[in-house]
Amino acid sequence: MTLFIASDHGGFELKEDIKSFLMQQNIDFEDLGVNSSESVNYPDLAQKISRKVLENLSTNRGILLCGSGIGVSIAANRHKGIRAALVDSVTLAHLSREHNDANILCMGGRIIGKEVAFEIVTTFLNTEFQGGRHQKRVELIEEF
Ligand code: RB5
Image: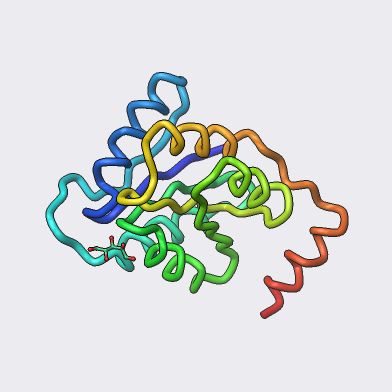
C-alpha cells in the first residue's frame, strides 16, 4: 500500500498529529500538504490527493482532512474511481472499507479528537473490502 495524506488549513493540525502517529507505527506515507495553517482552498488538496490515488487504485490510499471533512469528501468524490468516505467513528471506518471499498478516508479536523482519529486510521488501513454482494454495488457506482 502507498499512503498519501493531505489537508487544508482546517485539517492541518490533525494532519500533523496523524503524521506523528503513522511514524510511531512505522507506516510510510507521502504528505501532499498543506504545510501551515494559512488559509487555502480545500478543493485543490482534494484534487491533488485524488490524482495520486488514481495513479494506482489497487495499491494507493489517502487520508484527507479539512475543517469538517465535508468539503474535501465532496470534492474527492467528483473523481471517477475515488470512493471518499467521511468518517467520524471506528464503526464507519470499518464499514467504509468492508462494504464500500473506500480508497480515501476523510475526517474533520475541527470535529474529531486525535485519539479517535488514530483509531479510525488504524481501522481504515487494516480492514479489507469484503467483496461478495458489495462488489456489484461498487461496480454500479463506477459505471455512473
Ligand atoms: C475552511 O474554513 C473550511 O470551510 C474547510 O476546512 C472545510 O470545513 C470545508 O468543508
